[in-house]
Image 1 (cartoon, helix red, strand yellow):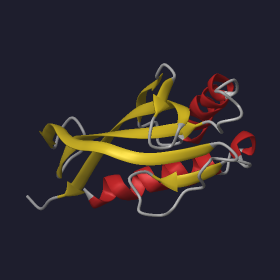
Image 2 (tube, one colour):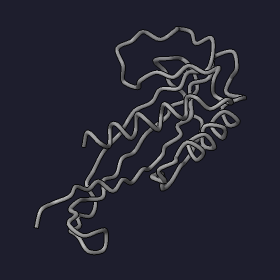
Image 3 (cartoon, helix red, strand yellow):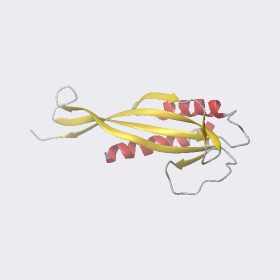
Image 4 (tube, helix red, strand yellow):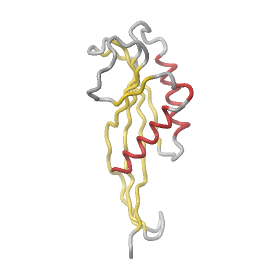
Length: 145
């Protein structure tokens, strides 16, 4: 599972470097780090929602002397809008984020990306949208026969 964490972090680093997203603040979701209140700019909280093992495989179709499995991960980018914005720029930013995910996915692990409807966060007193990416990794190792 460490390989999944490493791959997800690598993908997020690439996404953050996208020119269209350089002025936005990225933070870890479910973090204890204090966030500005009220928000003065867009905030993107990144969380890995789940990781699961899909199909296990052994050799031949993948390569001789290989054993492994397909692992799946769901990564959520919760995009918060500043209160004074009212969510007007959320769709545009989320579309840019989707494009950045596709562009940054050099390993071709992203199977699906969805944008949620606008919702209201009572705690942060702001609106947000979720961009959720479903990733699928083939994790394997060489085995002696």
